[in-house]
Length: 53
Image (cartoon, rainbow, N blue to C red; front, side):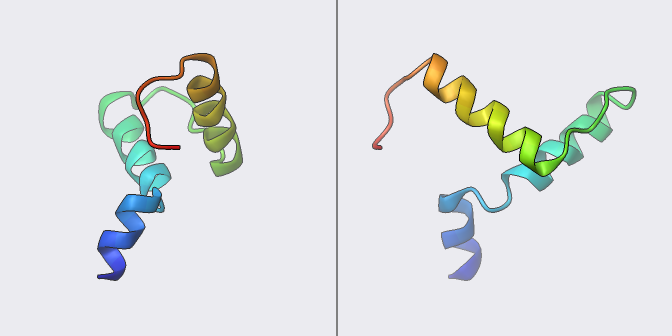
C-alpha cells in the first residue's frame, strides 16, 4: 500500500529520473532533487495539460 501511494504522489519520480539519466545519458549532469522538482513544476505550468489538479 505504501508503494502505491508513493507512486501516486510522485515520491519515486526523482530516483527514476536519475536512473534514466545515468542509463541513457551517462554524460549528462544530474540535477539536484530541488532543481528537478523546480523544472518539473515549471514545465507543468508552462504547458498545462489534462490533469486533475
